[in-house]
Length: 290
Image (cartoon, rainbow, N blue to C red; front, top):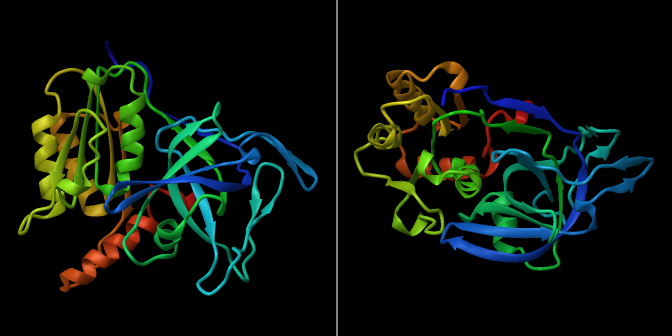
């Protein structure tokens, strides 16, 4: 079946919500899932505005999470207006972007996955989170709807792309036509519940971009009209774009987003630390521009 539509972007009204932690789950040694819920996942009135229920349409939808500054107990929050937020400048809110890993409107539960690595306001909050804790979040503001009619999908990225890829894998109608390749630190970071994912481990002496691109070349179908969704560190995305070009994927059928960039430095430990910070604070494409 030929591709019939490109991916589409939906703009949604953005709503600030106050939710509470329901439970926490250790997905892998470095990934902790926080499940939140509360009445404000539904429609409610805030100030002089009636706001709509929580809505997510695309697997890579994201929310902004608001957290206290170091040494503070309460976060600075934006003000809710009609369909948008007003962000104060001084003091400015501390906000981090996280993909909606799962949303169940029937049970009133929302899952967010946090990388826990010993530093960073988001990871530290998630490490210590317990049932009953309050979490303020806003969004999604944008949803990307995949194309209709593609004969196959190929999803690829590093840890920063994993929440979206996981949601795509779990919700895709035909697993046989979906191919996913994810780069992680090692076997302990594989998520065994995601069926059909090809896991790639970092290798000494091989760049992340090369390791992932080589694996994608082995997996990408060589026939039929497909759609590629790729995200992660900038060099990875650049290399995967080259793979898409080799395969002849038209631009309209390629969604590619550099989430973060490794700074130029000779200190491997510093690179790893900066990568970890980027996983937390720059976890999704174009988020600071929406």
